[in-house]
Image (tube, rainbow, N blue to C red; front, side, top):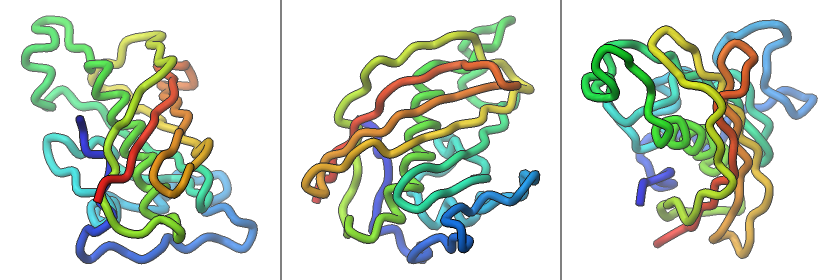
Length: 174
């Protein structure tokens, strides 16, 4: 199981500030809502498993959009595959989950604990991701049950083309 997020991360901001219309996206800009330093305050992931470089859009309790810049010097490209580097699909899914983790850490009705993957459904990969690509990761929270189980819809795109999509389930453990 992979850690999705830890709500007890020290120095984590209590909540991301939203604009008056409920969205935190800058109009026509890719200025980060959360830079990498802010993301590290919310999520426990660190190199080489920190897979989100910035959050560019955030709607509290609903959705977030993140960016992952794919570079050749990432360790998985040494063996996946020599001469033809392709980002592993499981890391694309993990990157989507980490964007979802930003949404989860900001929910006021979910307090403390550690979120783990509980399931991955209907995931499909449409095209390879290679060094130089910029993944745009959109995750929408579909439901939360008893503040312990939830489901998200994730989508990854490169240059407007669908790369991967699927449902991510999570469970809160104490």
